[in-house]
Length: 256
Ligand code: PGA
Image (tube, rainbow, N blue to C red; front, side, top):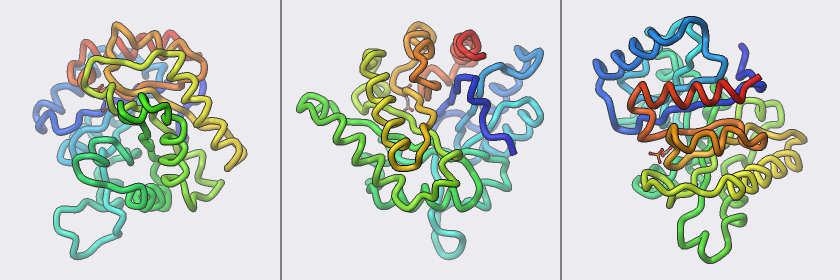
């Protein structure tokens, strides 16, 4: 299976707990109306669990990929409320997010839990986008790099070199998520290089790095124009198909 076209930028939509099934399907239908051919950017949508199957059906053979925002690290059994990797695969998900700061902060997911999820996702043959990012307090105390490296090395602990091709990392400073504040593109590149150098050292290869946190059509170019930044992970601005399409079109301009 082809993973991602590395010559093309990645535009990922994290819908969080928004859009019910009819709203998700309507978004997919509207986006498809603007697709004469496949987008020349890698587009991945992360809807809620219940919308994965219907919109994977809608986007079948369009090149748009579907992912899950979360998963269980268990395979099956008495884990009320959890969703397994096999269930996600059967619904049409090809990607899973792990380590989003909302999961870390609101649902108390530790680095250890995130690592278990990363290993489970890779073992299931799906692709993972691992999210890392510092809090405002950590940034102000000058420990951003240490925080990123700690989150990254914990999340990727025990990952086999042969699986590294199935991993991307999203750098999402917590203070930039949903706040309208963004990191400077120079700072985002600096963290992207830190992440790529880490995987080069540990796994002998770089890795795609996305920036996330208040990305919208008016600032997407600042990040997508940077060679170090392979894509964007978009929350709020990805809920509106016109705005999301504008970001995709910007990504297409910087894709080969
Ligand atoms: P935002 O969310 O674009 O609304 O800041 C990004 C994210 O949480 O992935």
